[in-house]
Structure formats: C-alpha cells, structure tokens
Image (tube, rainbow, N blue to C red):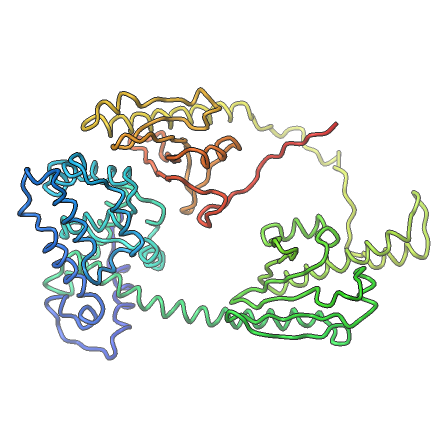
Length: 525
C-alpha cells in the first residue's frame, strides 16, 4: 500500500494554492465550498447525481433481468449530459455488452453486491471494457469507495510528486485498488484542513493540483523551443552561403529550411546531376531538429552513422531519410561522419594501394581521414583466462522453469475465474504450449463463449518499463487470431503473482510498443 505522508501532501497543497488569485486565510469547513472546487470540479457531483437518477438502482427487481431495462439504465447513466469523466470514444465500449439475460444478471448482481467486486472487475476486462469505463461504472455504484480515472493525467500527477505508481496500460483489479487507496490517503491528509471531505473531494484536489502542472509544462515547452532555435543556428553554421542558398518557410507551426545547391564543386562531389537543387533541409522542433536528405541513402549512411544514430534514422516512403538531432554535439558528429564519408567515397575510386605502398594521393586521403580508425584485432595478451564464463544452459533452464510456472498461473487463473458462474467453459480451458505451431500457450474463453488465444510471458519490471521476447510465429499469430491476448505475469515466484492483460495488441503499428530485433537469420550458398 502506498501511504501519503505530510511532506508529499504539503507539496500538492502548495501547488493547489498557486491557482488562487489571492491568498486567503479563511477557514473553509466543507471542501466543496472552496473557491477552486467551485470553479473547477464541483460539476462532478452533478454528473454523479444525474447518473444515479438514470440508474434508478433502488427500483431494480429480479424480474427486470432479461427485459433490457437494466442495460438501458446503465447506458443512460454513462451518457448523461456533460459527462467528461469518460472519454467519448470509451463510452461506445458499453455496446460490446449484448442485451441478454446472462449479461443483465451479471450487472444486477454487481450493482446489488451479490458478487465480489474483484470478480466483476475482471469480468469487465474480459468483455473488453476500457479502464476508464470500468472505473466510472464502479464510481456510480459506490462513490464513497471508488473513483473515476484518467490514466495519463493521474500518472503525470503521481510522477510529479515521486509516487512510483502508474495506471496507464495497467488495467487490473490490484492497480485500481491501489489507485483508490492513494486518493484515500490524500483524503485523510485533506481532512486536517477541512472538516468535511469526501473521496471525490480528494480526487478533485489532486486534479486541481494537476492544472498548475499544465502551466509548468507550458513554460518548459517554451524553454525547449528556445533550445530548438539554438540548434537551428548551429546547424546553419555548417552551410556556406556561397555554396548554398537558404530558403525558410513555416508550416504546421514548425520552421522548415531548405538548402539549394549553388556550388558545382559540391554537386560534383555528391555526384548529383544539374537538375538536382534541394538535397538537404531541416525542420526546427521544440527541442530537436529533423534533418532531411534526398540522396541515395546507401552513399551516405555508413556503418558508423548507423551505429551512432541507429534510433534516430527514419527512412521515408518518398525516398527521403530523416535523422533526429537533439543537441549540438550530435550535429557536429553527423557532419563529421557525413562529409568524411563523402571524401572517402570520392578518393577511394582514384587510389588503389597494395600493402605497404604510399602515394601523395594516399597521404592526402590520410589527412582527410584523420579521425577514421581501422578495424582492430583482439589483444591476446590482455585476455583474462581466470574469468568465469556465463552458463547459458543453466540460464535457459531457469527461464523455461519460470515460463512453465507462469503458464500454470494463467491456466489456474482462467479456470478459477470461469468456474463459479461458467463451469462448462472452465472445463474447456486448455494448456497448449507444447504445440509451438499454435503460437499461444493457453486456450480459454470469454464469458460469452468466444475463444481466447493467450500467449503467456513471465516478465520483470524495471522503472515502470516492461519487456518480453516474442518469436516471429507468435508475432504472426497475434495478427491472425481473432481474440488474441498477451498475459504478462509478474512476481511469478511470490504467493500473489500479478497478471497484466493486453488484448489484440498491434505490436508493429502501435506507438505504445517498441519492437526491436535481437537475432538475425543468415542464409548463404
């Protein structure tokens, strides 16, 4: 459990009070009467009241199950006027729930507290509801215990006060409980300032604190824009006006600068026809430059440039290539490598040396390539035979054991979830990891009977980042299967392992995932 101490609360309270137009020492008994709450956040109480008026929970009867009334009331409670507690795109998730007796029975039991909230939460995940929608449904059921959520905003707030807790991409019952406990801790601290404080007030208190963060981020952005301008000046210094004609224009709030070739000498060096005018350009960003060039990539992207800027080179579909430059040192390094490479390409056609031979041309080439270093041999005398090698077989054996344990955890979790209310589906859950062609480890089912193809990954987390290895076959199956999941299991060897579920991931096209090749297959004749 994350406990909020007084020092952390004081930081938030200081940021909260920064938004007051003038400092007042008035004692406000009820937080709802605070001028900032009135101005920014008390509309949440109106949304809650409207939602409960649409829900009409106390009027629900057993014979309403299957009539469509329960589903309709919840839908109306979600779509109340001015409801910004859910992104409008997430509201449509509720349509995934079919209007039938089974689903209305589940919703009836949830709102009437006839099933455990944990089971209900997991069931909502299985249905395909977003974290934001699930949190809102829990909020209108019991606003004294559960709060709505905006993952990105609250992650930003928590990070600013050094709370190592993230909600984005962590939709789980455990994560939601911890989120509400953090707000409850702030409610406890806020109660030392006001006599009447609700959990929703503490939620609003944090949200209002987040408003002054937006102002701070804007100031940081202004500083970064100045950094971008500094990089622009440094970049331009590499181009002689007699060789290049600079033309600058603005588009999409960014400055684009083109360099038109004026020098025949440079045109010849780059082996360009007279028709070619603009080969270089760049766009000034907030804190970086995007450098474009429109020449044959193979001539200029050497191994050294590839290694130095491997995460910054981005080939475009129209023949352009961009390199992101983030500081003056990177600009210096790029031009050093780029122009040395050009000289090398030009001169190596003229100079062909046998071993030990020297010429005036080779001396000139040597002078031009002063910072070029040839490939090195291993220094045998420096080898340390006493060093203990890595036991890769033992590492692989342990990885297999952990993987098998993670699969058993997921198998048991799926069966335990389905067994109480869907025993026939629970009987069909299978472990299929022994068949590698399937590209998944567990076959399970949604509560509606739809099959789930689950790939299980045992992972560890570091600095809130998560990663796992996926094979080409598994990647292919993630695009093929209709209801594909990746279950990431953490704390595998603990008494309470945790499971993070990712549904139908698009690893190659989604910005949320970084995919990186680790091995290569070499074929030759």
